[in-house]
Image (cartoon, rainbow, N blue to C red; front, top):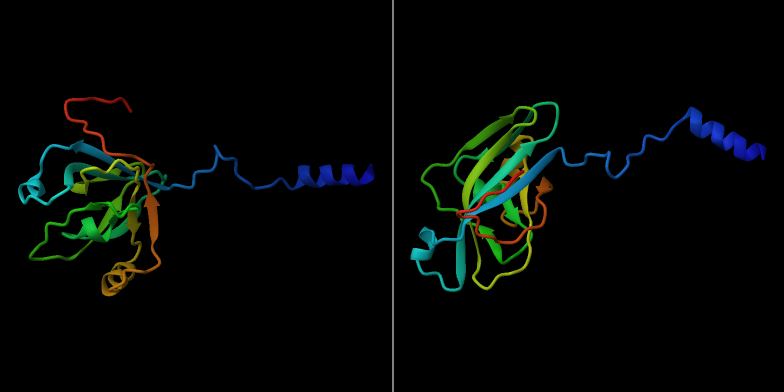
Length: 174
């Protein structure tokens, strides 16, 4: 009985700093993708067989109470910062003449929107997630760009699982 009382006393005096599933906020940054429309885009006019391209909005949100900064490439963020967890889905990169690094600063609870095109196989019906590669330092970005295999330790923030849904002429409450 003394051992139980001693254990209870220790727990009361030195409470655990653990987190409940509801109370712990692991995603200090969240990522969201909105498919704007599955109507034909410029890629469809090229007639790539068995592909469907979609105008989309990728949003990165700072959920923290402090500002954050990260690095992107001016023109190639579609392939350098955005990715998916499914080989059948990818972001289109239109190419560019000039590409440079940009430091983005997000105030607390603010977001940045990336207007892009995401493509998939036309018969694609699986679920997928999008990720945002978070390059906190410029060296992380340049090391990633220098690697041909693109295997560099970077922090990736993932969206919730989703599938393609045409949202043209629709509305939603958030």
